[in-house]
Length: 327
Image 1 (cartoon, rainbow, N blue to C red):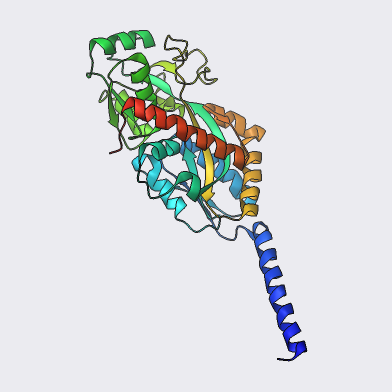
Image 2 (cartoon, rainbow, N blue to C red):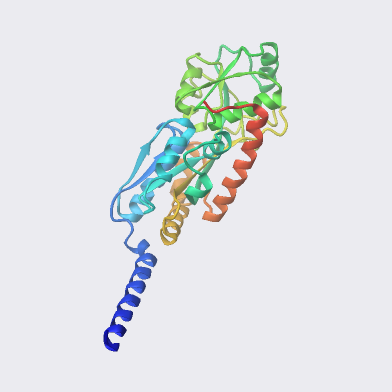
C-alpha cells in the first residue's frame, strides 16, 4: 500500500470516529423524530397517571412529537419498570416511577431488573400525600379511635392498597407496626380500585393517594381521618396528619418521577431533564397539580438517583420489620 493510500485510509478512519462522536453529541438535536411513550405502572386516574399526562402534554408541546401514556399494571409496578428497563436506550420509552418502585427492589430478591443499574433517573415531577380513609360503617372518627378499635378486633379490620409492595401497602404496614395493631391487607390492581372498594364497604379502610380519593370526599361514602405526610396537605388543610393525631413519627409520602433505560445518551437525558424541570415549575401547572393533591418537585438526575438509593435502604428495613412478602 502506498504512503498516500495509507494516509488516506487513516484520515478516513479518523473522520469516521469524529462523525460518530458528533452524532452522539448531537443526538439531542435531532431527538425526537417519533412519538415517545411514558409507561405508568398504575391504573389511570391515580396520581402517577395524572402527573404523567400533565407532564406529557408539556413535553408534546416542547418537542413537537406526541407523548403517549401507556398504563402497564401489575406486580407493584414491576411489570412497567421491566418494560422500560428492557427497552432500547434511545429515549423513546420512559417510565413514570413512583415510590413503589424502590419498594419492589427492597421486597423482591429476584426481579428481572436492577432499578439502580438498568434505569437512568431524569427528574422528579411531583410529591404528594395519602389520606387515611374509612368506610362510614366503621365506628371511628379519629386515628386514636381507629387504633383503639383495631386493638379490640385484631385481624378483623381490613385495609386496601394498589397491590403488594405498593405505597398504600407500606403505609398500612407502617401503621400496623407503629400502632401495634393487626389490620389485614387486601391488594387491588390500583389505588382507585382500592378507594372504590372502601367506599363500597368491601374493605374497612385504606391509604389512597389524594387523586384517587378526591372525587369521593364529601360524598358521605368515605370518612377521611388524617393525611400520611409529616405536613398537612394544602388541598385538605383541615385534615390533621397521622403524626399530630397521636402516632408520633409516622410519615409516608408519595412521589413521582421520570426515568429512562440506562445508557440513553447523556445529552438526551439532559434535554429531557431541562424540559421536565421547566414544565413542572410553570405557573399554569401549579393550580392543576394542587387540585390533584400534588406539589411540583423537580430535581437533577443525580438528586433523583440519591433519593432512590435512600428509599430502597429505608424500605428494606420497613419490609423486614413488617414481615411483608411478595406474592
